[in-house]
Image (cartoon, rainbow, N blue to C red; front, side, top):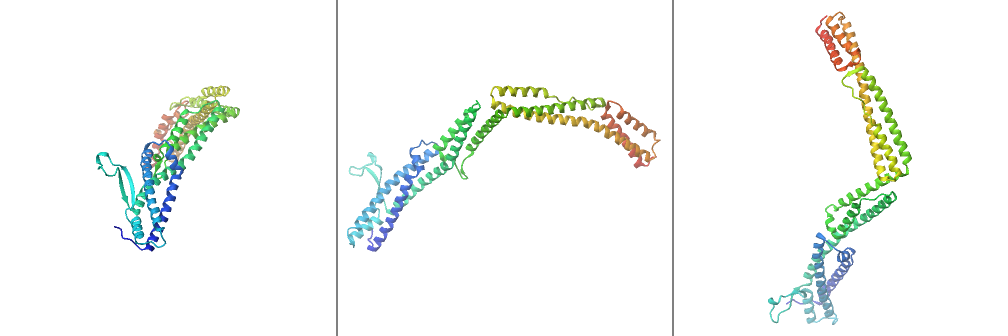
Length: 404
């Protein structure tokens, strides 16, 4: 039996427990009114959110039952204390039982018929003290509030971004319609699937670093890319004439480069026979056909396709121009190589003369071999380079060896 305590301690305990009850009551009302909790109650949930909310909701229901039993004990205790200004011994004993003893009766599930006695209880009853009841409620509240907070965190973070992405996709659809084009239906399907996933299973998006935005970002990149492509198409439509003029200018520049490379090629083939001198590339004709096809796309209002093809033609012009310039440099390099070999041969002949080797028959023969190769058209540069190298080594050998 619980020992009674003095009136002042009873009043102190009752005041403390009443204040605790008021805080619990306010917190439970706040949990019940939380927007995320209400959406969890009415929403169609899936995955781990559905599993964990089923457990948490059962815990909340049990929490409220326990709270009602706990509250009834406190109300009874306040009624006992209100009987008289100065409680008597019976009042104090009853207060001690209510406030300190196992006064909270929690009705549990029904006792199976096969486990009952004839006069026994039909339901399981658990007896708890007020402190034990509060600890039990605290545990159930922590589970429920933690889940609600996690769900609210995901929804608060991702829902505005989903709304913005929806608006962006709607804008993309409007732009496509203005261009007589359509947007990949997969974007709408994927956005709807993501929105459904966030609403039905928000806990699947919880990570230690925060809400998982990876799928959202990938989808945003696809929508942004699609929108950018349509904007290019709109610019192509609005600036078709200037686009054609720009590409015509690039094509004319390429044609001039090809002509220049062809002229250099003709000069080189007259003067050099080895290494082989392949013809420079000619792509102006095919690119001209592609440019004409762009005009047709514009006439048909195929703006999105026109923008894509215009980008490809622009890149093809750049690549072709670089290839022609590289080939021209390669061709002129052959002539530069011949000039360099002639200069080196002359320099080493002058060196031989300074060394007093002008009458050296072997050197004279090597020099004549190299000279004939370099001044014969077309010139075999590979053979000429080898001949110049042999003459150079012969001069250096006599110089270092002291042969006169």
